[in-house]
Amino acid sequence: MAKLITPRWGWALTGSGHFFKECLAMIAGLENVDLFVSKAAAEVVRMYRQQFNLPKSARIIRDTTASAAPVGLFYYGVYHTLVVAPATSNTVAKCVFGISDTLVTNVFAQAGKCRVPTIVFACDTAPELTTEAPKGMVKVYPRNIDLENTARLKSFESTLVVETLEELRDGLDRRKREIAPSLPSPASGRG
Image (cartoon, rainbow, N blue to C red; front, side):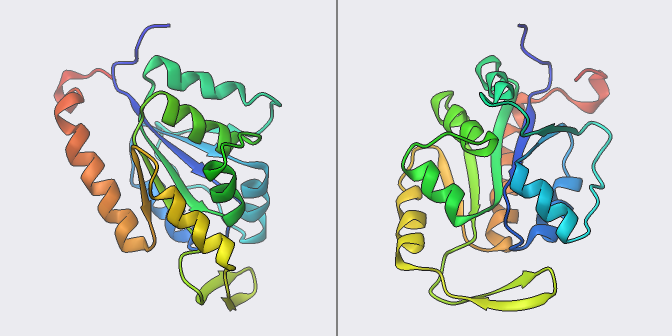
């Protein structure tokens, strides 16, 4: 398979409602993005009554195969960056312990194996949080194991773990600056 002229963003959605709407808004601001939607994320989209307002260049990849076949795209330079946002404590724990049994945990593993920089917006980052549930704002109290797994994930190579929307925006902006020199210019008409 030939390399694409313009490598893409990979963005994986998990089953968390934590800043889900805000993450969708950030995705809408990216060009050349593939959205990896876990089965749980598909449920959250319906619960939060969200619609994807994605750029025309966006592609949606759903969790429909047992082997997560779309992860093979990481082997061929299709992605310059993977974003996992928002990331549930379940996803973070699986990533920390190398369990790759969903589309999202598979793309995380393959991004690491292919040295694709990854940004993870972890949901459980403090002993007490306020988050949006389908019927409004609620308090949650992440367990110590959830906080420990988030801390462990921070030690992974080529992985930036962010804890706030501002940090997520900053991480995206930093990656945009880092990849800008390697992307074709819009005037070239390629990509």
